[in-house]
Image (cartoon, rainbow, N blue to C red):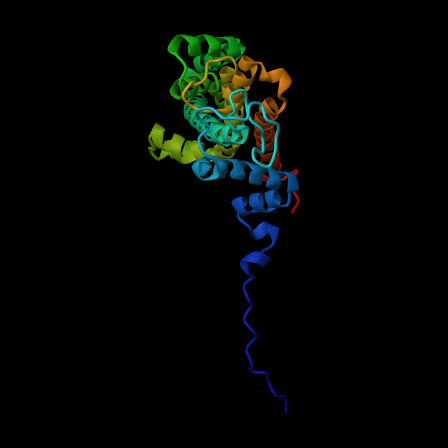
Length: 302
């Protein structure tokens, strides 16, 4: 007499979130997983986050550099980590407070340029009748000598943080528009966009519901790169004396060093703000490269 086994098989256990196979992860989690494995990308992202924190907590790190000091052009020491300038002001405090203004200008002008660039890029890809006109406008804008025009507009309007934000944004959106348009063009030909038109979806609904999410990864990269270029543009304009005279920025530190003659006799007055600019630009570039590699299935590791 045979005995049948009445015990039911053990239920299959679901894999935990940390043990999911790469194919089971969402696209966002696969991108983050690949990005977190890139040491240069993670270090660069940490540098950018650190600069943002320095900009936010600048009043807690150093006093606002104002007035005069007794130690003129003192080299870096324990009392003054980055030395002092030609009238005795602490360069470390200038760099810390310059981080705040430089980051504010970079983020604000980048946000404005991204809004303009994304809106025109999606509109050009979706409304084909406007594509030719907008593409010609982008080509003409990219062909213009940007720096001389920035100098001219900033000089005519007057130096201020608001002026710098608007001027930098107005000359930064064409690159964003071109990149977003090229990405959105490939999406407008997909069947689900035609289906959305067939069921009666409005143009605004299709652009915001389907095209905008499709270009979101490009927007992330554009925000980082545009912000770093905006900081570089602000530093150049401030170095030429077109920055806000009532606030500190990295470019203004260099301008003061050049105007006072400390540019050649006190290396610390120019080294540290220059390193801050270089560090931000390099970090932003490495983050964008790491992010592009992480979201590209052909280049990321499973």
